[in-house]
Amino acid sequence: MTTRKFPQYLSKPFQVLWFEMDELVLFLFFLTLSLLYGKWMWLIFLVSQYSYTKTKRSQARGFLKHVLYLFGLVKMNHYPDYFQQEFHE
Image 1 (cartoon, rainbow, N blue to C red):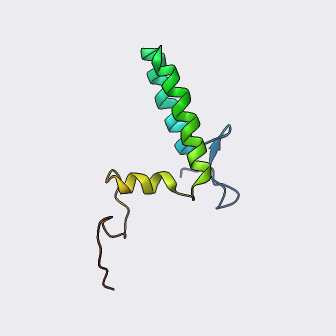
Image 2: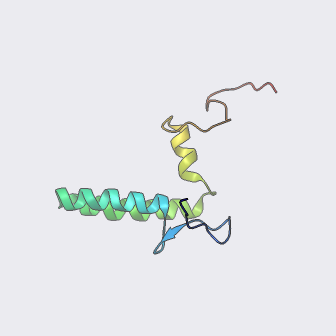
Image 3: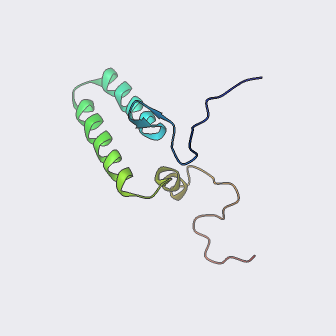
């Protein structure tokens, strides 16, 4: 059997240092690009991390997943298409 660490509270997201998982992915992605390409990528790295964290804190929970759903990059199970206007139960 495999065991996984489960958060103490369901409403408390899993964190590494002070980053939640979506922030950590963005951080590592832009950090890698900055290390590879240097110069202007460091500025993009700092601006993107700051703006995403500020936006995330001012939005509701699940913000990133819903934005990806809006752009059609993620399909949410048991949800209608984003642009569907009429719903029949």
